[in-house]
Length: 349
Image (cartoon, rainbow, N blue to C red; front, side, top):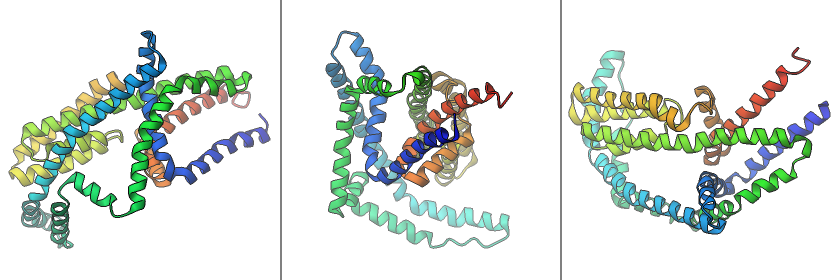
């Protein structure tokens, strides 16, 4: 490949990245819809193999998606709201423990004065606003009703996601065939092989890692609930859902779980039980969940995962976080292919 050809090929991803940066504010519902369509396509293909038409199969899958999302919202949102409200009601007791126990211990250990930086004022403000809004749903509704533009944007995104998902899922196979038809015939075999490898990696990550996150959230929530923590579901689900970043979910869960146990029970026995919950969760993830649900096809180093998420969030915000790991997975396949070409080249020899 000549330098001119190499530059022309490098300009394509650069132009796409620039376009993505410019359109990031409006692309989120389309990206979410595309991810949902990609996740649901194998199920639609399975229904098609049972002699159902594509539109009928997609309609069934789409109805199942809506049913699952509705049930999750109906079950989780009220439970989370109750636990967050309980947590905010217990904030004075938490503050008292921090002031009377944690701060003196830090002062004696560090040998310096530890200021509270007005934490009581901040907590009182949060409690007052929470009580005024009346919970999660009211807080969200209150925030989006402050601006007509915010209402319109929220409604457009809410309506676009299912619409985009339905049409992309219905036409998914035709889109794939159309993209393949546009490729030059001489690179089609290589492109098809890379596409298959990328699909394996993306499928392993999106379907497998999502399953691991949900199962871990359930394990942590149930375990912390058996320990007796008042905020078991909040801590457990947050720790599980951010576990796609290596060690972050465990770190956050341990920190908040230990603090909640110390404040609520004032003993080390329950702290040990909290630590045991996360140790068991990590063992189950490493020995059973990840090998079973994800496998070893992703191959992203933990540092690469953290770096990709941070870069995506910094450049493109929430859209970048959504795209970071899928793009990193595909990029890993391309880098592996480039490495094979390099090792087989005369330059390397």
